[in-house]
Image (cartoon, rainbow, N blue to C red; front, side, top):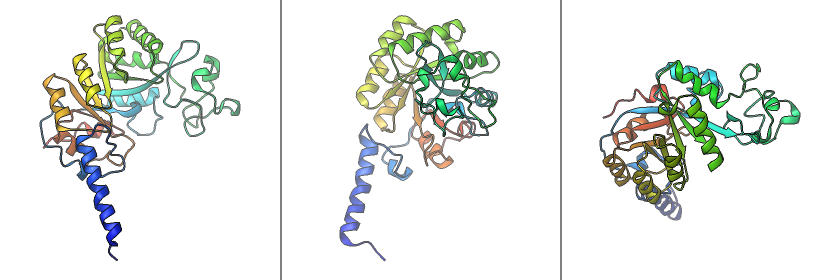
Amino acid sequence: MGLKPRSFFRSVFLKLLAVLTLSTAPVGCWYNSNISDLAPVKEQPAIERTSIAHRGNLHKGYPDNSIPALTQTLSAGVSFAEVDVRRSSAGELFLFHDGSVQTHNSFAPPQLEKRKVQELTQGERAQVWLNSERSIAIPTLREALDLLKQFSGTLQLDLKGESDELLNATLEEVRKAGALSRVTIQLKDPGRFALIRKREPKARIVARCLDSEQLSKAIAAKVEAVELKRWITEDAVRSAHAAGVRVIINIASSHFDEPKSWEYLRSRGVDTLMSDYADRASLTPTK
């Protein structure tokens, strides 16, 4: 049975709105749309073809943000492994995505469930396991950095609860590990570009940009890469490339994380795809 006139026009309106939003507006969110909605973005060449393992994982049997997952990812030759960095109340840096201990993200004693992960002591954190066998613990940032001595590749550090204190502590830990050239630091607040340049001029920065204004500030700060946060326009890609800045799109944990979308986005000038299947996404040919 066909659509009623009112339903038909509403459907057409919503589709047109999605196309206009995704092709021109920086707040466009495509997670509930179709790849064909991005058609207004014209084809253009990419600078390079790389991929980022979302939460450091290739989804081949290991938990997110774990040392086994990172070892598997880096040994597979993936260019970048993204990890989530948190700072405890005592100042310890560790990897964990969510803000609290839950039954869906860990295995912990009942008394620790629903606790904010930053508020756990080092001893309490040692009781939280990432797998049901209770053999994979929450790793420290230093443990992740030490893997770079064994493998090629770069760690992309997503600072959860981004703050000046977390940024400074992370820079110090990276310096101690002698890993400054092997790490990119992901920032959301353009106001921190000056801070990181002052503290460490050689730091490699990835800017997460919500709109064209933030993109302009990131390019002016000479960042290494920009993540267009759920939006893409032809002008944005061209502007980044003109400045030698790599363009990242995060399609992990969405229905876009599949070969047709990888190929489409690369043909639109996207250099780096953040994916749950980064070993496969990096092999996607560019048309």
